[in-house]
Length: 173
Image 1 (tube, rainbow, N blue to C red):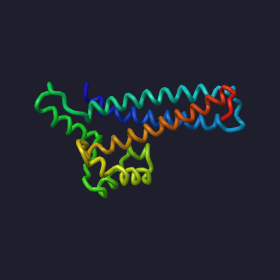
Image 2: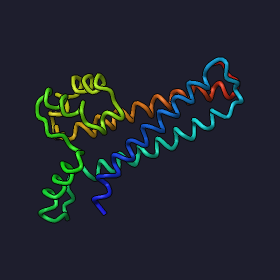
Image 3: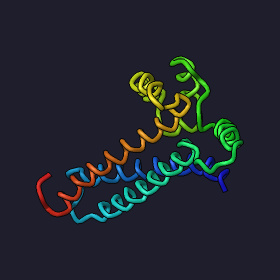
Image 4: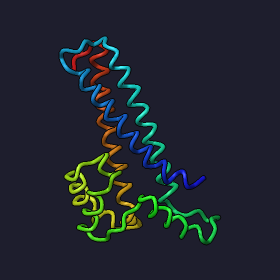
């Protein structure tokens, strides 16, 4: 059922963020000099990282279904229905200018769970013009911002995993 995807994209993204953040924290505590290389935290963090990455991958698939091109075989009223569902579920943004987007995204409950107001501000300054150009739709910047945040968490977790793996194997860090 299509309606479920609109709700689940936020749930999966939030869960991915929480699990990835937890993995990063565990890796950092494992990498402290007081931690023993044989501590089980390495495997726990690795499993959290794997689970968070799986949620991230599913979130990307859901975003492509919701925001990607409309299939050729779709009904004529599908585009209108989809845009109404995206607005109703607060997946897309309404603002057109940088100030409107900043105001809308800094008070958005979903965005606040994953990013601070400063991070939103920095992201908009960096990617606002890029999002308006080409085939991209400015309304999709919210999901793109969340996916970029999750991608950075995945990358940070993978880097920490490499370092933690060296420690776990007894190699110099």
